[in-house]
Amino acid sequence: MIQIGIVDDKSLNRKMIRQNLYGISNIEIILEAVNGLDFLEKIKALDQQKLPNVVLIDLDMPAMNGIETIAIASIRFPTIKFIVLTVFDDDEKIFEAIKAGASGYLLKDDAPDMLLDAIHNAYELNGAPMSPAIARKTLLWLKQGAQPYPTPSTTTDHIRNSLTDREQEILKYLVEGQDYKKIASTLFISPQTVRTHISRIYEKLHINSKAQAIQLAHKYNWN
Image (cartoon, rainbow, N blue to C red; front, side, top):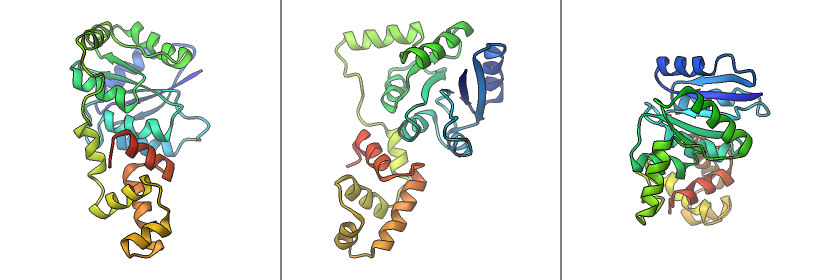
């Protein structure tokens, strides 16, 4: 059984996805969310041994968009495969999504059987399913000698900018490998104050460990 999550702010889109997957014997939809924040909250309530195998996610959503969600969730929940399901086919969105950790990229007007094939491809074969239009665009872009990933995304910079100046400073020291006591000594504050700041960093970045904070910072060059 392949367990599926759906993240889209429009109820009609979620309904269409459900209809397209209805009656497939080895597909079970276990989670629906209206944006990234809603997804991250709902997934906390699940048994961590029963997370979705594949999440179908839109890009343009309020509160937290698809790219921000994939960037965080692919680090916190590395076993989940994220397949973008969107109307956007421009280069920047495609490569931002891939850099964030998306396993596939489909357009919402693709045929329903392509969605099912993409789910099986990502889950069973660890593949990278794409719409033919997206695959052609990607191949052309690479043939033209363009770098596959653009400069650091302003979208993911928004995640970092949710931190205060002090929190960004402490995150920088964490990335450099300093422990609580060293950071406290450097900043002339108490270790308990450092712990409080780090707890807030975890909360704002929707992560739960120092390793995840460092991985996210390295991934997006938050130096």
